[in-house]
Amino acid sequence: MADGLAAVFARLIAATGPISIAHFMAESNAYYYAARDPLGAAGDFVTAPEISQMFGELVGVWLADIWQRAGRPEGACFVELGPGRGTLARDALRAARRGGLCPEVHFVETSPALKALQEAAHPDAHWHNDLSSLPADRPLLIVANEFLDALPVRQLVRMGDGWRERMVGVDAEGTLIPVAGARPMDMAVPARFTDAAEGAIIETSPAAVTVVQEVSRRLAEQGGAALFIDYGYVEPQLGSTLQAVRAHRKADVFAQPGEADLSALVDFATLAAIAEQAGAQWLGTSEQGPWLAALGIGARAGSLARAAPHAAEAIEEATIRLTAPAEMGALFKVMGLAAPGWPDGAGLHRVT
Ligand code: SAH
Image (tube, rainbow, N blue to C red; front, side, top):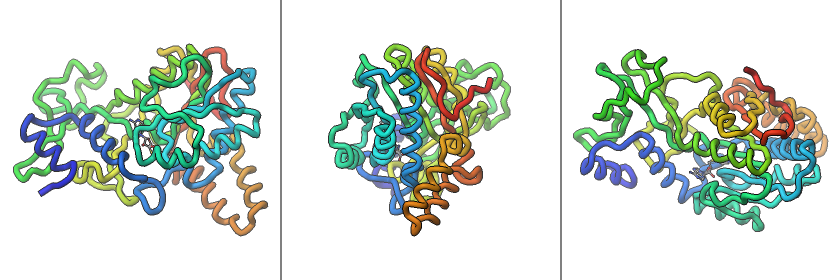
């Protein structure tokens, strides 16, 4: 018999019918993040800022550089969405200060457990549950690393008789399983996918679209720039990318809701189009490896290694992990956005 959140879902579904994948993912991740620090060797997964201080430093260098070339507007705020342990912000703000940028710090975070860690590292920061309460009268310098991938996705599945929403139901034993919803969803499917093969899945993230829309609208109105860094794809594709990770291993998506991290690849092409529609400039979307190289990770690794020769090997390993195509260098993408009239982003190129 299932326990914890799985049992709650099983009772809900038995009483009222299947729930959407988006509902399942949103509730599972809210539960998952609320009470734990999932990051690091003892947790479930490791993120780029936890691999090396160089990652956050280069984010800080990027933000300070675009702010300087925009004419050093006064009052600009540093904003991080889903700051985890606060590590990226610590390294980014140290590097930004060297560039003359000393911003007020704002964090968007829903997890009480992670907020407590962020408070210890950044006692002067301001916290928000969502973007709506961020300052509205100043430029914003925004970063989000592995944030969009945690937001719920909606899935449509092609059945023999047309498109349905992909949902979560229960089998006779009370085990959670994917099922097709009862309502026809053909109207929600773009024309080019109408005749896709049976079993095809269309995945979208209305929540990620909403975040990028709100960020872009604010950049257009207030000035500023944003970096979204995540694993994702640049060409639109079909198929489910929803995955569960627990203790650094892939797990069954439906088996342990609330106990494993659920994430999905980010659809960067759609988000760039959304950003432009909302009035922001899309500065380009680059692979993480070339972007870090363009910002000087090689030189930074060299100077850190000279200052701490005993750590030279670890610094070299971290550089490879962050940049090599077979590691995080190609799967992870960096998307830059800015207010109209702001300059280009270092290391980013628009490819149309
Ligand atoms: N950026 C950090 C942490 C990534 S994990 C790093 O790179 O190490 C995802 C982060 O997003 C966590 O801080 C999590 O609590 C937060 N998060 C997830 N869903 C959220 C939501 N809907 N609103 C705000 N924060 C959220």
